[in-house]
Image (cartoon, rainbow, N blue to C red; front, top):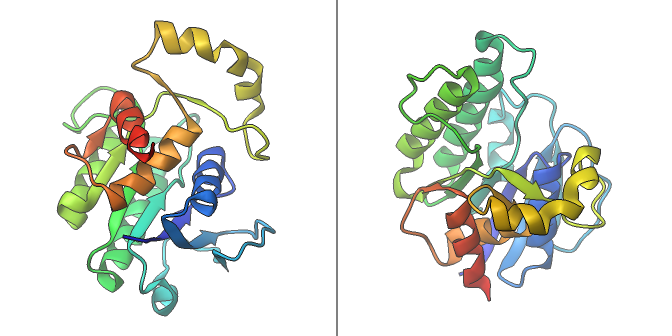
Length: 222
């Protein structure tokens, strides 16, 4: 199976890294990025749509057809935000995009970047974890077995990419140590990209992917 992927969040570290893996991967034949500002990248596989309002992508429906995957890497930090604002920017935005894509692509696989500690019960004390949990649950409701929730912890960046947070470069040299001491919480950005591609081509027996699952699924590429 060839992958035709829609990617969001490509101006961020994770989205850029996933895009990088997709453009290099032989199983990916086409990539559509939806972004608020142009990324200025040219590639034979790549199509770009600049769209400012992710709360309403209904006008793009004709351009979203004939894709079999969405790698949703768009997200915001909860720091400094009240629950209502974070809920709107996380749950409302993500589920609108998901519902629209499900409408135009019946067999689409949806991969969502969540995070370690996400609360599937939606009842915990951590605001961001509850909101992420509800978002995950609704995505699984929309896409059933074709929804995959990615819960990375520390992500080792891919060298040479421009959107990597500077904090990651400060600590990236410690990755071998963290990988040894905290293996449940550390993976590479390449692992995430490859694992997303493999959800489409190879599938996986879990829908909520913790770090060990991300690494195992990525390894299926070798």
